[in-house]
Image (cartoon, rainbow, N blue to C red; front, side, top):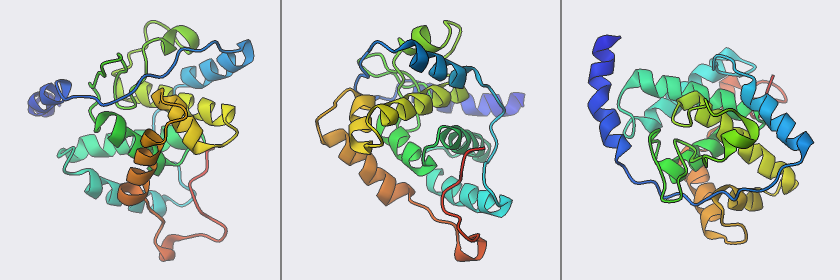
Length: 213
């Protein structure tokens, strides 16, 4: 493990100085019910795992996504850890993991140490005011799993506010509600780079996307 950490240190230092091209989520008042529900989601900490009805689908997904992510994250162990966490946190929030992969590419370029000019942090570029509203001051937004849990919970919240309108939810997420550039960019990356369906041999009757458990 020590050897792996020493190997990854230069890579992490490079990423720490990479630019982040994120917007700024707006700090808005939350109702007590909404804040409580989001807080429960944030505090429900479980070890990430692939969530698929058929484990073979999970392995096929992980292998394909790992290949696509290889240029950005050369270390196979880091890729598998990240992808497993993305799939788990996305699915438990009722989001398409492929959408979240596209959002992360646009927001941080898969740099877990990214900081935007507006102060957004980590993979999903979460604004630092969120722990005050739905978490605790001890939550580290540069921690991989914590950042993904916050980001997916926040995007789910915006989708609920916008009654499933993805474009408006993405606008809220980026702090650019009403402007098409950011939603178009995320959806474009999602569809072009990260779209995935299970191979026909692995599809189950009535199955489509992974479902939360």
